[in-house]
Image (cartoon, rainbow over all chains, first blue to last red; front, side):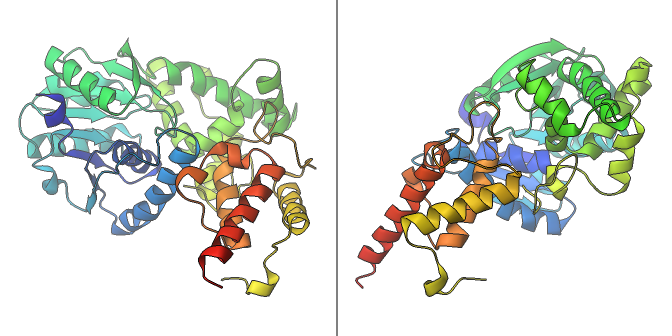
Length: 288
Length: 96
């Protein structure tokens, strides 16, 4: 496939935080996007959030006011993705849900269509098990927010073909992303290192050693962490972080990956981070 | 909900004081009008979008095109200048 063919019709599955902001990234680079979610309410909200995110991307210099914006179409059915030339799955970080959705998508699209999972920690080979054509699947771990963070982690599974590697390289180049390719493993590189570290940062707050803002101030001021681990946690979404830590713990046995009680408690209370308006920090109204 | 025209701050001093109060309430920190809000140790650059929305709602301006860039929001002085310019442009452009 040529670059133009790959970018002709991108489908994104899942209108959560990541699916919506990946859609923003693609639209901001002029690609037409079909955004799919079973929840029509989420799709309505996506239109509003994407408009705000496109403005934020421009504000931060990630796109210019002169660039054209791609057309957004939304749907509640994966069956509308038959004409897709590339698909990005960005649903909840639960292996059964992702496997089911990828399997459905793979059955709908034409053979040879690039199939991307935006997983933050589930091994690509596990997800590929559910597919009739596992060679078409590759992992791309976009960082949040994807329309602002240029570098992405690309995970090549054992079955991923050269053609799939070439297709994803083309797509990411069109999207202006810098890809770093790694081998498959639980949490790959970024989540394997970052998520247990955030869990430890939460434990420090839980035991009363320091407040969240003190932890972040030290990690920023002394160690050069860009936002601090607890602001990063709020940005990731505390529920997503718990899901990812569980994936890591189940597959590595590392006790440092067992979500700590304060993290679980915040999720139980619905304090999920920026997206709910409150996590380790207060954000006023929920931010897209 | 929109503010009536008479309640929208439109002098440099009123806009500046309004912004300083807003920043203090949102960040629990006192800010100087010429301090870079996004420099090391300052605010997350994602907060800039909150500032865009706040300016539009509070001062009845639309921030679009080339004005939508971070440098216009780095300091209270820069935001005040932007609001004053947009308010002046709107008044001039309305034919009033």
